[in-house]
Length: 197
Image (cartoon, rainbow, N blue to C red; front, side, top):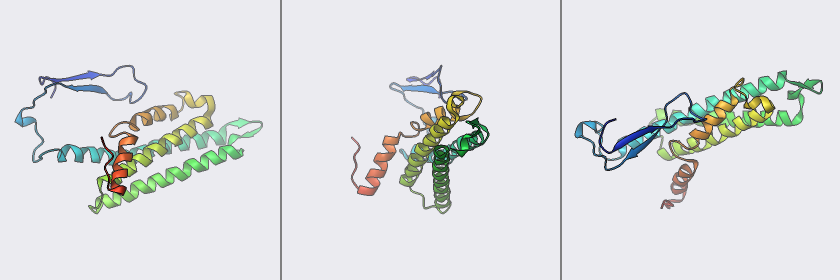
């Protein structure tokens, strides 16, 4: 809790991502918690790690929502933006970008759905959640970047939601475990060899 000796929270100001929420640097220096601050019925790291796993599972879904908005915005823009006398959606490379975005959006959504069903059945392992976060955040960020490119200069304005989602996805790429951490978790799961130092 705030006010605990050895604990400090410093708000991070002037950020370009996650602007709708408070983000803080947490400092623990010889911090001791009273017994009443402990999680009830939990011993060791199981409680905090299960919370982290739940957050990662939610991210697997949430980033697909951001990706869907970016894709839909790019599709609508491409169908209405006219260049050289025709909508840019009629150009081959624009269509290739839209198709690639839709394919990855569909795969990521199906992955999240599959993981959700496994979770409902009590069969979801933390490594599978890592796979979901790793894949879906990476692909959502790629979708946002492609959508931004379709909108050209308009893609970096706040008139459209793409740059906001892209900036937020850059943060999601890092929090609740970086891309590299999830890669190492999966590497250990498939090889049986721990590569953590």
